[in-house]
Amino acid sequence: MAFALADAGIECERQVAVRVIFRGRPIGDYRLDLVVERCLILECKTSESFSPHHLVQLRNYLKATGIPLGMILLFGSRPAFKRVIYETARNPQTINHDR
Image (tube, rainbow, N blue to C red; front, side):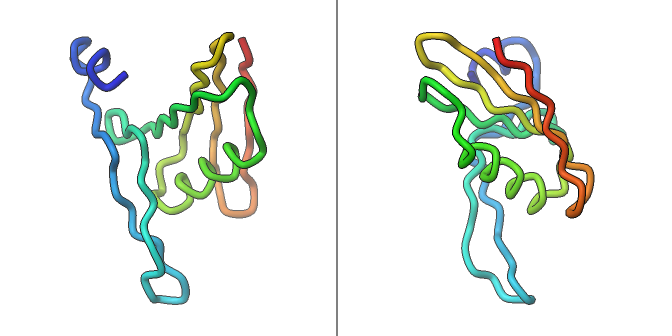
């Protein structure tokens, strides 16, 4: 995916480390699959269906980075995707686009 984006002239960073802070202390790091143009987090999965864990994971990434838009891409026997818009900590909104 990163090579295809780069070939299309789209800026893409792979395996981006994001520090997780809890009450002012670092407690760990997230590793984002892809960050596109610094405004979209892409998480690539090889599973056959979406799980609630996938959405929770992406919402956490969006909250930690301040990036408001993410997408989960499934590369199973039937490819699919979900777009997630994270507006505020109190009002996450998920828009489904299963195909």
